Image 1 (cartoon, rainbow, N blue to C red):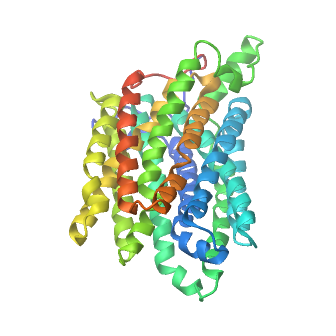
Image 2 (image 1 turned 180 degrees about the vertical axis):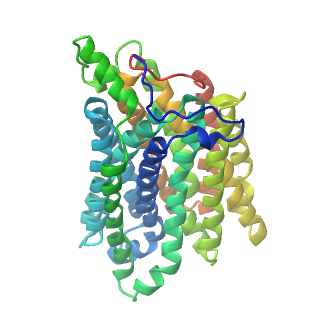
Length: 427
């Protein structure tokens, strides 16, 4: 049974791709995009606060780095749980629940009275963070036309860099007003994490359920069938390789991303430079690169070729990203690393959702992405450990970026090309 949108667009001239997207599809995109932007904000704001938190609770760099690691580990539970719920009960409900969850635990982090309490709260924050991606990406990509799925993928994934840019601006312009010489500065940064919860009202009223998921439910009713738990479907013989491969691939992608971003504000601070110009360049690059390589992946290069080119150039940009002392080169390096090294992520939402059938799409994409996040979660701690063992921060970051980037390329080519796959109730 094929879904026919009541507000399907009429054919448009070549090049005017945005005219092929209906108001309903744009609302689905906006709701999920903002959820991901604010998710990125609530996670990355922590990267600016590591030194303050370390001072407040008197812990070493490896331990303060573990705040990022534990969040990423708990993303696995959120991604699997929300993905399973999204396949069974629809995409919207789990998305709204996840936004409320991560907003609440970001807020609660500001009340931490010990490092152990903050560690536990940031772990629980990770559940909501994982749920937003698992439910939100299928909701958007199942709304959009198949020939624009790469574009939607790049636009959606760029939202995380937009969230990082937003946290950079908030830290630069708001933090000085709340940092009174005590530990109140970092606490206020946690408390403003409650704001994304208001997005739920827009999603509730303005965003429709996925038409592909609705078609699946109609197909099941017509044939008097019910779906088994979608999580179990991932481990059946026809999907087990897909599940394993995509999980390893996402581990490499996320290891590379966190190698690029997590300790970068600390690196710039150690150089006695203002963080905003460099983080702005990094995230402007990430936003534009994600969109560009998502769009490029719709052409002859496909998902694999697009990701490969971006990753190779990202690795080549390492010397001017972390090793130079020249201000112009550092700024160019940040822009290049964002555009290529983080921009390779533009293909990820489309690629993952195309690897799994409708019956297990949300849980499959959520499982792979967040098990990958679990594999990559050791990155912040590893970079901290390497520093504690005497390795300079630029060297630790550069080695991790190059190694994980090489693994991204190898794993990408061990899987199939997915460009052009269509979503139906049965597949």
